[in-house]
Image (cartoon, rainbow, N blue to C red):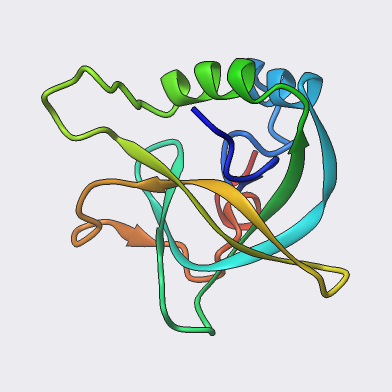
Length: 137
């Protein structure tokens, strides 16, 4: 698979301040660039969040941007972690796509983001767009 971006933007359990094996894995195979947001809405799925894209500029999901060292290693592990199985007959839990990320220094970078791939109709929205601020670590 050809990389459409060297960057990944995370907003939930992969954030550097979340102490788990996959956030540590991401830190090993990437470099933290900075904080930022994309236009989307954030929801509490379970013990983890899920985001969907939004066309509304006031809808923001906050998180961290990382530059990936090894695309194949990182996405093989993270796709499995995020419930992406190309052989599944059921819809994947998340889908990965490239979107603009607005970084705190004012620049914009295109990065991979995992978007929730199911209905959010009955889910609680995290209105602040900040998983750690509202859901704890």
